[in-house]
Picture 1 (tube, rainbow, N blue to C red):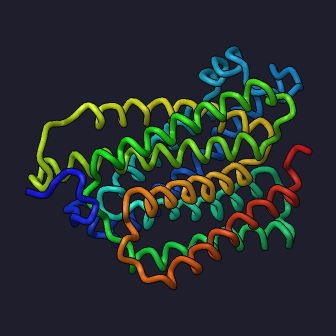
Picture 2: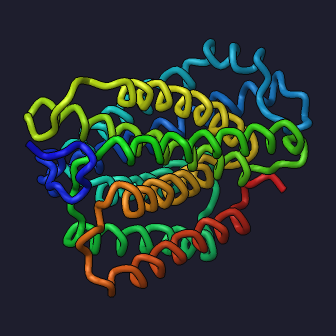
Length: 311
């Protein structure tokens, strides 16, 4: 019987990366379409009922979203995207499938340009290429070097502690600076929270799967339940920040931020805490650093040049 805290133990979960990548690609399509529909619903509510101060959606505006068919359809599609993403986590390590969402950026940019009759100029195309290229390089390398390990109690405590600190920091920033915050603040906040959602989902899938397979001992302990509760809280807060980001920026800007910030956070935890790159060669680290830098720079350029971004 392998000890629960043994991070070097090979997990029975997440050892079919090709299947995980294919499922994640389907989820990326739903993510893109869902973002477009949700953005349209938020845009209408903001135009008709917004105060113009861009300080975050009010409770009344959130309730009015429920009456917008486009927003409801988008929510259903995003729900499917989450379902496919969670399913992919059962077949491949977190650092392999989480960045696949970058595909949604390409789809969203094309669809949004058609819907709004906005021409995609050269700087925007280059920004999208940088985002997707950086993520593609990262995933390609991760596919060959990542190994999923059995996740122990220590890792669960570390992830929950970091999430608690992040939520506190975001809450303070929102309380004191929300009137000055632009689209990028809400996008980064949502991306960070969704990164934790993916990480916690992976933790729960790993723990439950290995428990059922008899690889780890013990009961379905309280830490796993705490992870599920924390996952739901992070998802709810992230959803609010996303809706506010839609009211301040274009859907492809929002998707660009989410598909870079989200995986960067999840991958960092997957490497540093979950041990998914414990046996990766040293040359991988600078390659990953380069890939991440390129993707982040692409998001910055997209925010700078996109014609629909509120200034």
